[in-house]
Image (cartoon, rainbow over the protein chains, first blue to last red):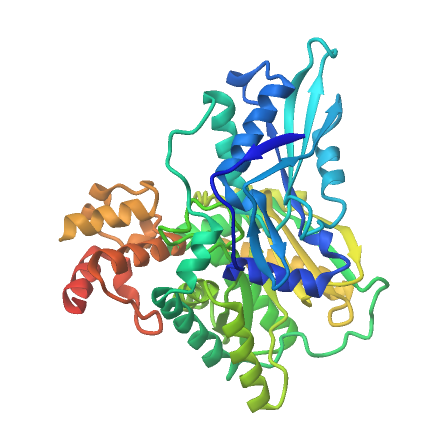
Length: 428
Length: 77
C-alpha cells in the first residue's frame, strides 16, 4: 500500500469531461472495462536501481500532486476529492509488463469506492537485491484521458529522477468545475451548444440507418487495419496541403462514410482533447469529449474536400468543449422538432500524441502496400455507438462497429477503401 | 503588434515554428506546420491577450497569415 496525504479535499459537480465519460460508462455497463486504459513506464536509467520503496514514494507524490488520482465519484454524481488514503500496489516479479497491464485493466472500476489508479511494479532480482524495472499504471477513464496519462508519466519520470517537481501545482478538476460554472464558462458552453443545435437541425438523423441483415453474435466487432502505406500517404497529403494528418484522416473517413451510406452531409463525432486553453493544457483529468464535425461531401477531388474540412475541423474542436447537459437538451429539442432521434453514432478518435508529418516519396508508399494487414481483435456485446474509428501510431486504424448496422464485410471494405483513397490522393 | 502575434503563433506550436519563421513566412502559416490544434491554441491566446472573441462560423482564413491576424485583431479591438 502507498499512503498519501494531499493538500485538500472537497466535492464539486462533475466537470464536462467527467460527465461525458460518466454518461458513456452508464451506457456501456457492464462492459465498461472498455474505458480502462493504461501505461507502462520503464524506470529511467538515471533512476536505477530503483527499490520498491523508492518507486512507491514517487507514486505517492504523484497521487498527492494530481487530485484527479484521488478523486472518487459520489452520488449525484459529484466528484469527491479525498486528501488521505492508500493506493494498493501489486508486486509482479519477472512478469511481462504488458500482460500485467492487461490484467489491471481487465475489470471495471468501482467508481465510488476504488481509487482511479491501479498500480503494479514489475521487479527483477532476489528479494535482497530486488529492483523495479517497470511501473504499470491502469487508469479509470474518470481520472484521465490519453493526454492526461501522458502528463502523469512525464511527472512520474521526473519525480523518479529528481525526487520531486519544482513546478507549481497543475490545474485540477475541482477548479475546472468551478470555471465551467462561471460566467466565462457558461459563455463557452453557450457557443458550443449553438453549434450542436444548428447542425442537429440539418444533419441526417443518423449515419448508419439501414439494418445490415448480417448481425454477428456478439454484435460488436473490431477490424484493425495496419497500413504503413496509409500512414505515409496521410503524411504526404498533410504536408502538401498544409493540414495535419489528423484532419486528413478525419476528412478521408468522412468521404468513406459518405460513400458507404450515400449521405451527402456527413456528421462525425471526433474525440477532442480540449487542451487548447491555457487552463487545461497541463491538467491530469479527463478532458476529452466528442465534438461535432459536419462536412458536405460532393463529387470533387480530395484536395477540395480537405480545404472545406479545415474550418469545419476548427468548429468541431471548439464544440468539443461543451456542457453535456446542454448538448443533451439541444439534441432532444432538435429530435423532437424533427420527429426523429438525431445522433450520428459515428465517431473518430485519433489517439496519437504527436503530429509528425514528413513529405513521403511515392516509391516507399507503393512498396508499403505489401505490408498491409487486417485483423479482427475484439468482439463484445455493447457499445454506445455504431461506428468508431481509432487511429494509432504506425498506420494502425481500427473500426469498431455494430454489425447490426454494418456487416463485417462492409467494415473490411471501409478500411480497404480508406487506404486506397489516401494512397490514390497522395500519389495523384 | 506583428512581433507579438508571431510570438503567439510560435507558442501555439510549442515553438516548433519560430517567431522569426512566422515573420518571414511567404506561404500560409499552415504550410509551416501551424496545425488546426495550434490554431485552436492561438485562438485562446488571441482571445485572452486582446480581449476579443473569434467566431468560427465565419471566414477564418485570417488565422493563416500574420497580415491577416494583424488586420483582424486591429479591426476587432
